[in-house]
Length: 225
Ligand SMILES: [Zn+2]
Image 1 (cartoon, rainbow, N blue to C red):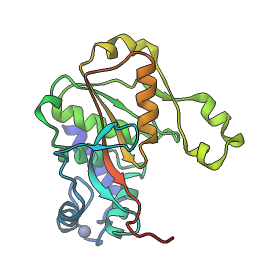
Image 2 (cartoon, protein in one colour):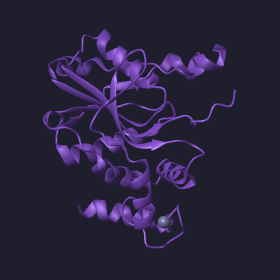
Image 3 (cartoon, rainbow, N blue to C red):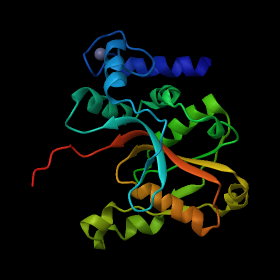
C-alpha cells in the first residue's frame, strides 16, 4: 500500500498536469475528474457481453473504445499510459473491469508480451490480481525468430507476432479452468489469436478463455474509398 502511494508520487514528480486539460488536480488514474468523467461517459464499454474477433470467434472484453482521431483527450490518455512512468496508472485502470462472477475466481492471468518488451499488459494484470485474486503466470514470450526474420517479411507479415510458451508452466495451465489473457490494446486480435494458438498447440484448452484489454482500437467509422 505504502509503495503504491510512493510510486504515484514518483510519477507525479515528472508528470504533473492532466493530459486532457492541463488541470493540476490529477487523481491516481492520471486525469482530472472532469476529463475522466468525459471518457467514462463517451468511451467506456459495457463489458456485459464479450466482443468476438472476426473469423476465429475468440472472445474478449475491453474497457474503452479507442478510435484514433476521434478524441484527442482519449488518444492523449493512451499515450500517457504508454509512457515509461505509467505503471501505477495501469494498476488503477484495472479497477474499471467488471467481469462476470464466474470469472472472478481462480483465474490465471497471462499477460501478452509486447515486441518492444514493454510491460503494460503485465501492469494491467497486476492490478487485476490485486482486485480479483487469482495469479499471474508470465508464460508467453515473443518468439526470437520473429525479430530476426523481420527484414525479409512483407509489411503485413511484419505486423504479425508469434509467441513461444514457457513449457515449465504447461502442466499448470492445462489444469486451469479459466485463463484470461491480458493486453493493453487490442486492434485486429492478431496477437490474441497467436497467443491462443500457442496455448492450444500445447493442449492448454481451458473451459473458459478470453482476453481482457484496456483499449479496443477501432478504425475511424468513415469510408474514404
Ligand atoms: Zn483534465
